[in-house]
Image 1: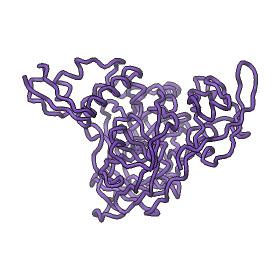
Image 2: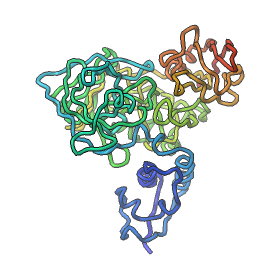
Image 3: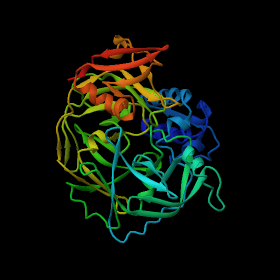
Image 4: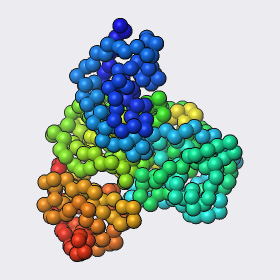
Length: 447
């Protein structure tokens, strides 16, 4: 009987394709069958149908437990809303004679988006999503309202767009993958990594611009221009090789990762921290409507570096994601970032030294819109500031600090920004027909 030795890295690779399948509970047979790992690119030296003797290291056992729990609780469609790969679509053809600059519309404080007209109607908000391997994703409600049809010879869930106008850029006869919701409140569609495969994509946070051009980046110099690496299962995503206090890390560039740095528990085990990680809140996998998972956070005892960029003693958020680490919008906002997928290079323009993340204060509440658009409390962390103040799950949030509840006032990034001040936040909530004012004093969790 052949033997397959698995560690946490190979398990992540093998379990990722299984977790993307449309089932709720992962079966033990799926983990042990050789064909699952063979299809994931792990050599097994078996026919793919014979059961194997499997040797697991201790971290691999922990990975199995986490993954089984994770996939048994949440459906794959919700869990992997951002990082799952839709069916292959025809490549988007750009007719760029000269560089194109598109105004960036920021939402949820730090997430980049652009407004687009579809078949002459709109505007619709599209998120720029480098953490997704697809090209164009469109909310099914938008596709229905526009009465979009499948392309010739195509079928669900693909729809044909005759004209897509993004600022001065005109695209014609493009295909979009349609699904129920984008996972991001108020967002109608997403422009993913595959859309920009043949062009230079620059996400310029300081100038609030998105630029596209036909050029290529110069050779890597180890400072502002550095090599890109393929990351994630099957190399579907891109990132940079980084160093976290002496530990090598694959850091995925995620322009919709509404955070600073997020790492999976296996990676975080290797990092030196100033103090033990503490509970810091909830993260929604796949966007605002996705399932919530607990987040723990700690300050790195040392710096994180990639190329000529130094992130001084950043706070690392630990979440069971199927990637080693991501750098999210709250740090990317310091840079103009250019991605060249043809030559696999990236350029980061901005202050090369990012000061330490300020002390972290938390509220302990997660708010998201329901099907009617009302913002409701989804999670109250036991023992948190929100819990102590009397916020309840199911409360409708009417106002936050005197402003009507919405993505820009009650979204996760804004709540983190309000909490960071350390001052009390007034929530006006509606509960059982009554309107209540609740003052929540954020608690210091990380110095």
